[in-house]
Length: 395
Image (cartoon, rainbow, N blue to C red; front, side, top):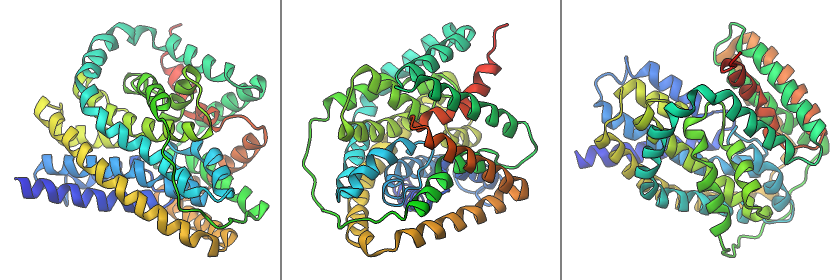
């Protein structure tokens, strides 16, 4: 059993590395694919080892995904907030430092997650039934906080509502994997096109890192991340903004906050599955489909998997970040951006068809316009949050 367990972790790390490095391949998409394969190709594999594989892949993805987000400007939905501070450091020759700041946040998160597991599971099971009837008002308060923390409040409100209405339209048309073209356009291709237009040049990168005091960003993450465990429609981006509004961090601290929040939110999604049988990530949804209701023994095995795969992923990300830092200045950034854009178009056409391409085009133009308003990119997550708020509309 131990050998199969370790093999599952290693294979998950390899898969998570690939999904993390390839722009546009979101872990939720992989989760949906694995669910369909679990009843065919993977039907003869012990379900618990498949769950370990998915967990290992998901956690590894939260680490590796910062490399394309910061070096290539192609973020995932969980790392879109890292682009601005990450690119600022990249243009200063500190791209390696930017990735390590986020990676240290992820490492600390996997170390403290087992300690938080029991109290968080008790919190989820106690609070969820009490707040379910008040979900709309809670989401409205959180939305209001996100808007009020902006300097340009009207612009932020416009971005939230416009992306929210767009999200309602996309989610109500017949299309496979609607989130793929919508989120890729808002957070990926729009930034790539701006990068191509501006002809971004990357300077020589310093491979150095000075350790900092991580207490404030980690505490902010611990306070805000559990919200994603039982509040639908909230992602790690919103949790990071909320955490930063409680305890303000500088640019470097915010990257650590995002790194910790991404990993904690993923970990809490498994705890949420155990405590209230709700899935908040594609990985948790895949595990629920495979295992059904999560037992305490299965949760314990998942926590051990998170600890092992997260620790290994830290060192793997550190190595890959060094390699990218050495070679990024020699790469034609504009050509790479064009290649990534073409690759994303192909991926979306394969999974979402011609309608997906139309959604991608519309989302890209909307993303470019919203970016020009100079408000936080997390406001574009209104494409999901507004639909969730309407679902819980109490009147």
